[in-house]
Length: 267
Image (tube, rainbow, N blue to C red):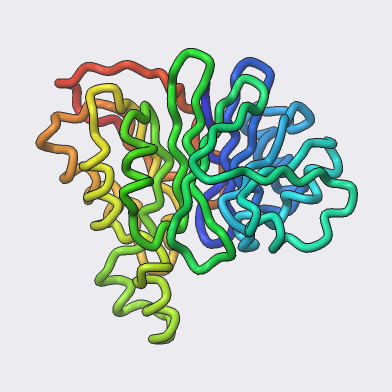
């Protein structure tokens, strides 16, 4: 199993997960044309998409979901609240997913977990491949929960929100109300909180970490990466540590990558 982040940030988010010729899209927060262009640049064929799995209904995660599903004739999966918030799906099949209940989608086994964000019914997902590999995808967390920690405890790869630096958010361009929303328990995860969570999730099989939804206004890739690297230093982490780009694909990454525990982290 491999994955490619087609773009991540406040302007749009999408992750393509592949096994062989089968592709599952987690979020589709770009126009269909952009999704196709990003996929083509990454060597992916979106006509082979088995489904679109949505973390929540906000435009930077769901903008292109229904349009792409209509074109490739695939279903859209998500929590009942997320699917209801999409509005009229037209001819698209909407497939509700129950919290903590695995769902087989082609070669993938997808398990949703509720998250705390100011959306209708947001979720994070663990995606298991045919060989036991596990990818955890968590955007727009607000705060991590015990259920999320439990779901991601055996992940061999993570796409994890590291949205803002707390100091840059305080001095940034947003009005006070927006800053409070971002930093609140139903907002976004800071670099510090993301680093603490990833440190809790570390285990010897965790080999790939991609930091996502990094703010262009209130964060810097080197700050996000530095916070997580510091949290993993005591474990001598030797895997991939990357920051997803907003305007271009990042990856692909092999979920089953195996690394030496004593090797330096690769950027």
